Image 1 (cartoon, rainbow, N blue to C red):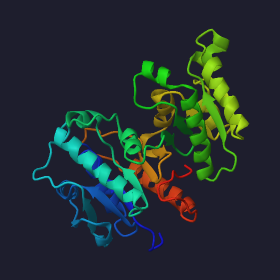
Image 2 (spheres, rainbow, N blue to C red; image 1 turned 120 degrees about the vertical axis):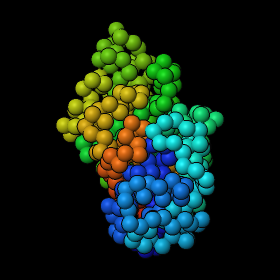
Image 3 (spheres, helix red, strand yellow; image 1 turned 45 degrees about the horizontal axis):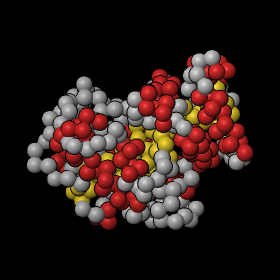
Length: 342
């Protein structure tokens, strides 16, 4: 990494889950090779390193400029100052507030250019709710606090990439929200995401909502009324979009090389194929933000939190993915708060 480039920020996630542990493990696996800072609570991160038997510890910092990136000491930019450790392995309002504070601090750093991008460890939606924070997840927090951008979630691994039209909502609500504007936004973001990954003319496949993509209207008409017209409109803009394709086969075709990105209509339609191929390989990328943000493709894993069993592979993959995206855009000038072409 060029010495002049700001470091990446890695948020600690929910302190009651495996977030602090996988951040600590990421640091211990590469203590000297990566220039980054953790954003979170110093007490929580010190405890995570201690539980892993680490010889080093944390250095609390209050500004990115104070980071030294020295082997054996993890620079932790303090976003909270807990006096006691939250309980491990269960929903806790204290953890929800601390996780949220870390995300907000990281967003501010990214928007000001103090960090090159954000990699986020998992948070728990019920903990946010317990803390009085009405957010379904990271994506909605990022959208609200990053200039009101229209964002989308892309889940990716080495074989398939999927962009979601709707994210965290009931299936009935996803059907309502998947209007023409939502379809167009997702298709455009999928196209730009492919280009950001070095694909000059990404082939964007749009999945249908209903079985067999509606079977000509026999199983629903959203494909005829909404999705198909959006595909045609995207093609008129010069995007290589096609569909709507049946949701039960389009990912297989993408894996075989026919498509570069699949636009899925709702959360589980898009995430099941990626997660089935292995959580350690999946990366969540938020598209449409003015900075790079990635995260691992798994949750807080309360069932193994605090037991030293968490695998940081997906977090490491998310870190590497962020580095790739940042490197591709480093030379391209842009307005300070404009959305990256991701």
